[in-house]
Image 1 (cartoon, chains in turn green, cyan):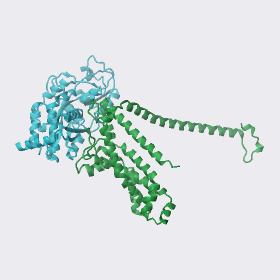
Image 2 (spheres, rainbow over the protein chains, first blue to last red):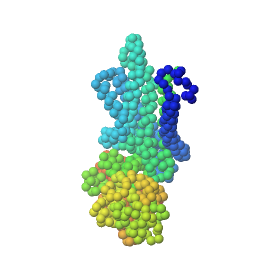
Image 3 (tube, rainbow over the protein chains, first blue to last red):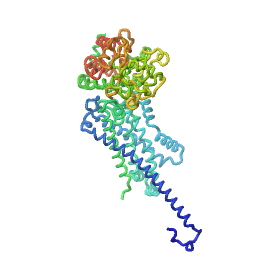
Image 4 (cartoon, rainbow over the protein chains, first blue to last red):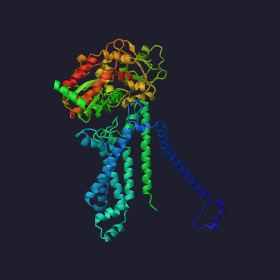
Length: 297
Length: 335
């Protein structure tokens, strides 16, 4: 290839065609090796993901029956379902979201709009970030110490509040980040029209950042829907159908935790079905979040 | 006394089938299958919904000390001083057995014969091969390979461990002096696994492994259990009849707080590792109606739950013990 290029036509340093050829081949070889390694790494990663999903779908759909949605959990061999766990999960996730979201948004607004450069603002942001990465089992223990132990024992409301504590820092972070993205010109325009600060925040900034904040909330919901650790010491679990917030309450992750390791085949089967339901639910939430985040035409 | 029981009856009536009364208990994993079945049947019969969470004996004791549940459950009895300090009444609910399980190629269900002595030496790390002379001597006709023994024990605090180490202590003086009996001990040899399920899974996977589980977990997981030599010198298989025989020979009259000793009892057909499992109920309940519902539940289980228990290979309590417990409820629990 390089033989066709005559030396006289090239400006710049002299090229030895043999060296160039060797260099080119070496580069191509290393390129090929790195590419192969990348493909291998991707394949390994995807293979595990595919294996997990295939196993989950295979075993989960295998046990999926109508009774899963009509019966409460029952002793081994009694053909129980998961309806109390499904509904318990929905209730506690709803409480967690309903309590955590407003607090999170308000803290996020404070951080983005009111606290620039203040010591309190930095402290709140630091604490919120620490809370974001705190192991969720600690949050469960915290609620156990302040709510479960001193008061009337395990309850659905305690489980919901533990989840709310997880929601707050996630929503704080997304709200602050999204508000920071709003251009200053927009705020100036609102002020120029005579709007007080609170009005410019509520009617202009929050509205403009709504998609991003909604995505953050959905991701927080997806996160708490699969949490086991904070519920173990707070809502404990309930074998029976119960909607009472003052009583121990069942949930899908805790039921999976108990059933997956049990000695009974029908319980293990139900654990797979529960895992499938959570996966599908979280997958749906993630898709909705992605659609929301997509810029509107 | 009479007014008290009248009040009790009135409360029980108030919590009748019309409004299902929920009660929450937590603790031992051992009786969890039978409590769950009792709960299902009692809901239909007396309108009490039992929510029993199997978090382990240690956890059950802690939660009832903290009064976060209506009752606690533990395989290992709580000692009298602690019961008094925590104002708890301890009573037995049902009895069951612990069985050794093994994974040796070529060894089938209940074929291998073991003794307490040998088990103690295996767990002490003194017998390390399955073809050790001490094992082959009592297993003539069984081809045992020159395979290393891998003892598996409970890594978590466990009532099953308490029962099993009590047996090893009874069978082997050296074990008693060196390691002793407790819910968690310093094991001289082997590897830990969490929960009955953890032991079952490990023994299933590891060739040469030996473990100990509550009988229901062995039968449900189709694990290879062994014969054991009892006090009378006979080798017995782990069957409900052998468990019942051991349970029948327990001397309840001497037991403090019903902490009866059913380990290595006399009796030609008795299984040597049998234990009662206990309920811990506050003597000063926060909510008298729920406490009454707990007593009503176990009263129902004593009277009607025997069949359910024996189907799952648990042993119901003898009638005199049930009556003694009923009397304790009346005299010791504040209504």
